[in-house]
Image (cartoon, rainbow, N blue to C red; front, side, top):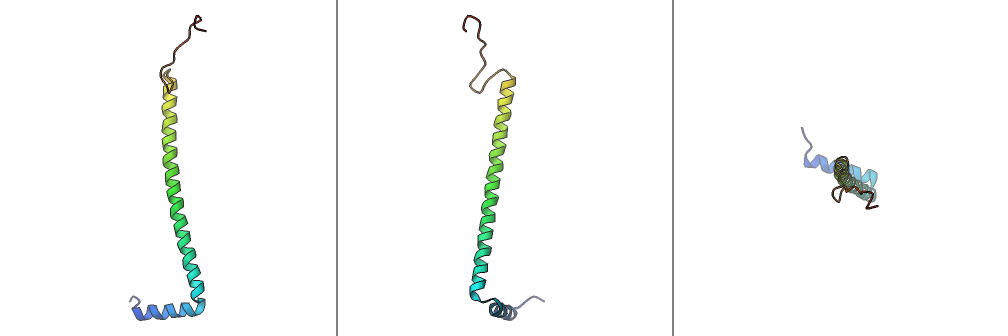
Length: 84
């Protein structure tokens, strides 16, 4: 019960008569651009979420180090009154 080649050609001819070739070309270009922008946005969002996850992990590690009495560079050295 699907469409055959003949039916599809008739439908294409009717669409061409109604809209014209130039308008169909513009619609195709706009649709292609929209799909391309959507894919780009999805990749950007994926990269942003990966970056955010990495930053959150680094911040958590820094907090853990701070609570343990260490800094990112190493351990905390307490100054005595003589060193001040």
